[in-house]
Length: 197
Length: 80
Image 1: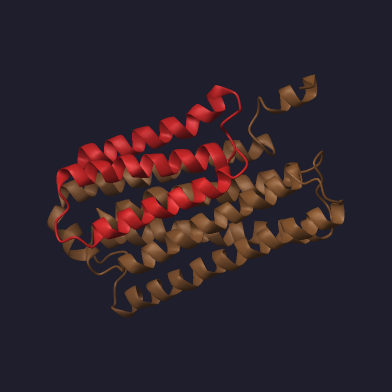
Image 2: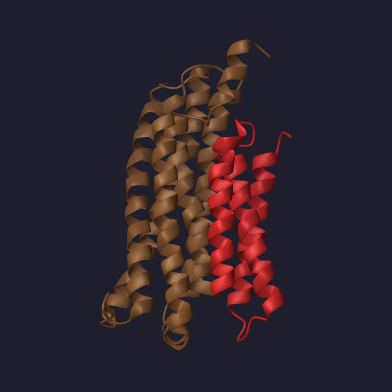
């Protein structure tokens, strides 16, 4: 192992600034998760009665979609970093993984919009009760992060398709991928908290 | 391991199916709730280590999201 490659492994992949953002996002969502858990303990019956009105099935499907999308993004990065094929073939394969990730991310948004339309169609708002205040705040906030993630993935896809990333120059790809994995990580905690428990 | 991402992905899917099955029970026993918390931690840990690719970076950068996960899940479990 060369000295340079050793140094690279000391830091998280991608631009370091994205990790500052990720840590801040984790802290922000973490406080909201704790707020939800604390309020649930205070108003347990309200939370249990309200929770049956949200669709566990949609939450489950969306978890599958996001986890698989995250896997596709990890494959896209790994393809660029490890492939021994030509740059054009490597970029083509990687861009297909990213395209797949975008399709799944789009599926997540579609299911979420369907879920929101069902909730809002019943006249539920942020002020209905504490459960729906947290439910809507958490899921809409996360939804907005998925939209931003989709914009990032689209840009990564475009640049990858144009052979813009190589083994030695894939920091941008890793940066965007890290953001998308954070969106997945947040959902992994959000799903059991809001839909299951 | 060559197929580590595939193994992680399948494991994540299995644990997600487990959580969904639990959610469909009328009553979740305390033991299963505890297992759900542990499985959620394992899922998060896998995303952090293998998807975010933090497994081989300097420990402090890897520890931040892991500690976040432990603290958040612990507090949620205590308040549950």
